[in-house]
Image (cartoon, rainbow, N blue to C red; front, side, top):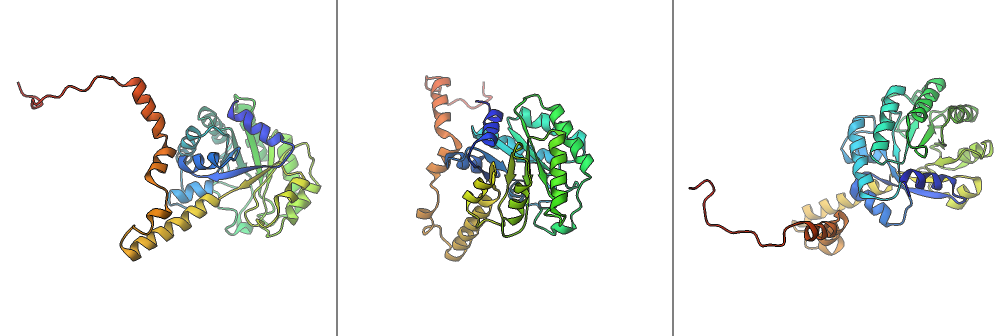
Length: 303
């Protein structure tokens, strides 16, 4: 089944489904092996992996290249965090073409201004895009896509920016009217109250996606009962990797040895397995010559 079709089925599932964050090919492989049916290619996590801020400091081509490695490493669909679309409607059109050609199933664009800032950094100071301009981006994306199952998700940032619930709903309905396939409603409150209020006032005909990074203590059953289609665990592999690497580096520096760590970290054999070494070995057996190489003592270039 096409990855785009897989993603559409996740959105249409009668039960709540989950996407797990990944930020490179290795983490994407780990997400799939853990059993997740889809991957969130997090802009924050990819930026952090490159050592830059989540302020569009990594170029869109660098982000797309990273996501391409993730798509190549996995068989499940990827929803790419495409920030604001990296410009105006024309940038969005080019992005859609590039994502489709690289096997990315879906993209999520947010209604802020380029360059964007992470939603959890001074959110109230972040201006929102004009609603009609952002709706134009959605129409451009849907008009450009070739695969009818490619999915465009509109991320509504009104609540993050301190606007009213009425404004969040007004924008969400405008984006649905523009043809978007799903709405991601974002909140930075520690409780799910804003999300649940939005859902009570939302037309269930259009799927809703949420990112419970701050209201993480809420049971997933609450989201399911409220009609959420997709939950994104948005940055947890990146954050756990930071903790593990900091601890490992500190231990080696303190002990001037790796002996105590070897039993606690992944073996080289596991690294090679995740990289697909077995497939290459099988391919070498199939395609390389079976005869032994000719050995000569002649010096290269000698007569």
